[in-house]
Length: 228
Length: 323
Ligand code: SF4
Image (cartoon, rainbow over all chains, first blue to last red; front, top):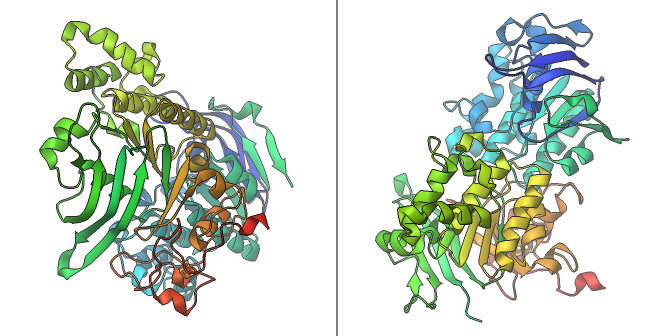
């Protein structure tokens, strides 16, 4: 599903935060990427999500080489990926009511009407009732907002979901609820998952396999921690 | 033994537009003794950070408090101080940093970015201990040492520090005034496991040296490693107050919410509690957990009092898990 080969990436002219990293996620596979904060794993997640242009290396999505990142990525490649970040407050447009936040990717692709029922069903599966859906981000808790961000990421039925520290700020029950939502979706659609995080126990329980990053910006020594 | 802090019937309400009220904290009571660590756990929005704000006098202007939070007399203070009524001047001059040290959430953001750790510590040492300028360098070194902050990093700015070192710098600042009570707000959020272990061990050491430690956290795994007692908050109330060994081991939690929260951990069942917590401006009349509780029945339409450490009409009996 996703193949990253020899990725080197960074910001401005500084040192690269990711050096010569390769990684593959098979169709339907759940891969955990474990590493300390600041090791470059979030940057790699952004490259995989086509949100950050690498300095070197190639990204292949469903067998097709990605030719551009961000707005230059072809729409069918962008919509094949759903992304959830650690900080919902930075990721969510503060002006949108939760209902519109969830439905926005459909509107943006001109499929608002077609996907209206799906947006409602996802909101429901995420545990968000009518009253919460009328609120704006500053009127709900982090956990409630992250539920909406996940529902939004699942709206266009992505074949790959990328979760970057999705639950790092959340309590145990909300964490388990969000992971269950992801897993229900993956079971239904056979989607692949790249889960990036620092919690060994969580990723070990969630993913098929976990790769550990040594924190050097260089995963050469990455080991396979679990394999089922 | 006299507690270091005695909280009784503490409630905090926020006045909102359109005559609404948010009951952020309701009728919370607990004691904290010297050498003891109490972990206050619960999900975001359960009231635990508002409780912290109330103890430090850092609530917004639309907050109304009731009850008391008393620091009893000690060697240096003849009269008890009620944190809720003493007023900002007294809190700033005699309480914050001197009798209660705060280890803040996201320490890097708490420190001023343009100043070095040495400058931060120097200023705090001078303000709290009156140390003269020429005696400052050794005093700063000693303050850093107490939180195991490396001396060769004192010249660094906050953004140059790793998460762990920023945490230690903040702890060093909290310890300068030799406050008998330390309050740590989400000290492990976003830290890697190794760092969680080190932070927890560092904080625990201060309790073992005789300080009272109040840890506010949503991280149950961290609470399990540091606390002597644990208070679980739900919808602004303490629903269970228990010995940590019994809570995390056998017989386990007695309140259905506490049990659900613990079972949700990935190292346990990894199953969420169904539903969401109630909105604090529209709390149900009876037990606030009832809509999510598998044990709820007609009795739960009346609010259960915190009785014998648990606020539930159908709490698991303390001896249940032994059977
Ligand atoms: S009082 Fe009733 S509803 Fe509340 S936790 Fe206990 S059994 Fe559940």
